[in-house]
Image 1 (cartoon, one colour):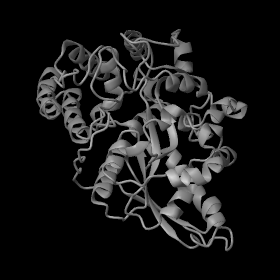
Image 2 (cartoon, rainbow, N blue to C red):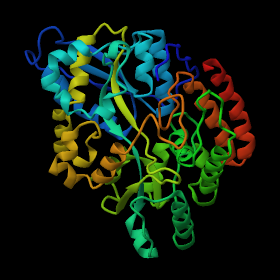
Image 3 (cartoon, rainbow, N blue to C red):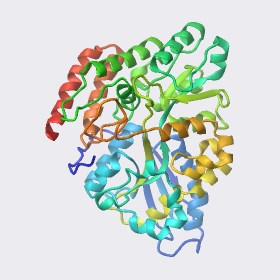
Image 4 (tube, rainbow, N blue to C red):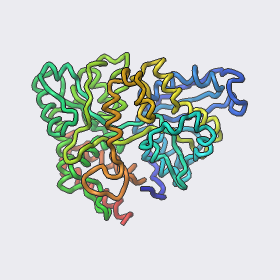
Length: 450
């Protein structure tokens, strides 16, 4: 569901900046003269796949095209705030940013991001546009059904677990577990192992803690709003879901959970701190990489459910070109390369198939080399294909989105609500008190749509 309201600018300081340069002397004559020697600035999330891109760009892209690329990588919460600030102000500091299927429709409506239609029409064969998964392209559109984003990687969510721990304790992970089964397994691991049972995100942020928690709310039968935009955060189903999530973390989750996001859970999982982890399917890459100490010891199952058949989310880190950019042609050359099958094969050759930014191309899932090198591929493919982004729960809702509410106000609303819930996870408040405050905040937004 699209809205033409302007998304609120997220203010605040941006911490933990990681600025990297992928510049090279270039290869004279390797590109058409229009972009030779041009420099573009890219703002991106600091996840493993994006970090690999930084390492490979100078030697393979800049050398071939003569286009220099300066990267700024930031943690997820920080990069989302920075991107919103940059694109809403049209400052023109960055040419390209990692946007998602949440931001692109709103940014396109507001004229903040460039239509890619003319580039795709010219280069459709080269980028193998028909190979891109429809589920990942559906939310890349804006006014007039023009395309405004090009996926870098696509993901859903699934359950990861340490096979050696399960074997030692005589435990079995179902292919399609329920949340009750996961909670029972976490308790048995806690009792019989030195590891904690599970890691779940508790770090505040609409794209951090609320990503997995909203899938729990969906499958428990809860929602943020009913069809009349009445807030539902104090409904029995939503309360039950949040209480379950908080209780599971407090009893069997990681230490410092209220400050643990994707990166922290990845570290806990790889450092033998936790035996299960429910999170993004793109976690399979670093977990199974050649440098991972636990590669080969991981089993994969679908995201846990309760009242629904599936509960995985749907997300893509995609590339968007800022409308204010003066280097759109060079920016297109970069993003079309970074999203290409050629780039995926480069990652496979240089780093390994497990590290390929997959989830956007059908050919990748069908590739026997990827299937052999990425043991998580089958569970990830099932998770991505099972998502219904418009009806992910039990009850109908007036907005799109699985792990987010598809309205511009969710940037601010979701972050505020997640901060209240983080307080409950930390034990400084109760779930009931947190959701009472969350309900009031959500109703203020819902009233705007009545």
